[in-house]
Length: 201
Image 1: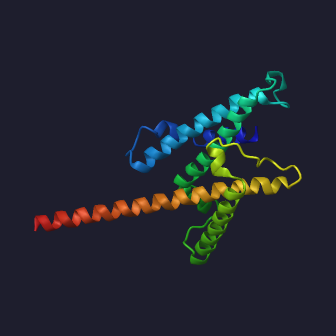
Image 2 (image 1 turned 90 degrees about the vertical axis):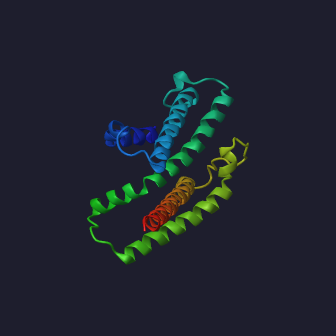
């Protein structure tokens, strides 16, 4: 329910985006981001519907007895939601950084701060690789049965920290992948311009 509250709050804060989705230039990154948001909406709706059917606390009156298949669907949608959130965060990372800069008043670039943030991102990504392997995250995305579940003897903070590092890993991969794609496209555009200039001469 806390996750749904965060999603609702996020949509309220970014409600202007829906009015501008048809405006502007529709490049590859923007189209991919729209597709990601659509997938996230579907995954969240599946999670909401299945959570109402398996809830034993908040919505016990709606729970189904022996709904094993519904639990499997709920968990499957949950793992994909984690991945889609990471992808969405990666495609919008510059927006996040600009918001952080304006919030904390970081108006001028700082080399030391940039290096520290990149080092932190690298550490989170490495932790995310470790967590992905230990928690069999990729197998869970394929709906492969796994014995890895929530160990109630371990710290709850550690459990969520592992998944947070997985989000950080895939967000970093998407962010730098988008940056690499933009650099390649810019290089091709410059090559075409040079070819046109040579042809004109």
